Length: 182
Image 1 (tube, rainbow, N blue to C red):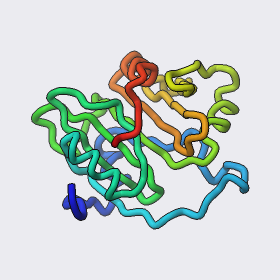
Image 2 (cartoon, one colour; image 1 turned 90 degrees about the horizontal axis):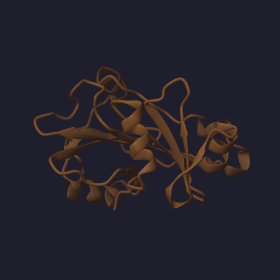
Image 3 (cartoon, rainbow, N blue to C red; image 1 turned 30 degrees about the horizontal axis):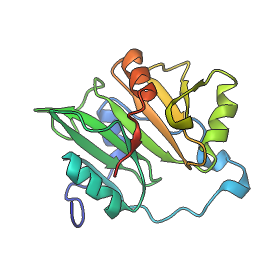
């Protein structure tokens, strides 16, 4: 997409609650050690807006922030939402489902800016993480098994895969398909 995204929702967080899902990093980045914190950039709120895979790739350049997804899927569009803390959500929408539609039966890949995410997730998992693809670690949230967290070494983002079931979320997180859009 060239230029500003047309659908801007002033209360994106409220829209995510209405849609039946809201996530955030397991450990808030401000709890990271002071030496790893960075000044927050000005954030442009986006969406929810439904995009093609090509349009989603273009948004990376426009937003100037990397974010992750589980790759293209035939017959799907990708709902993009970006909140003021810089959290980016890519929700997989089957044909006929509009952006902003309610429901919790969708695959969502969320990206949270988080300096030191790998080290912090290792600490929180306390040995319950598993080795994931590309040197990542994968951790299933004990109180919400439909939410699986990933972190890569030297990548200052925490990734969350949320699925319609624990099995789907885990399979996607462990598949090696979760990569930066671009």
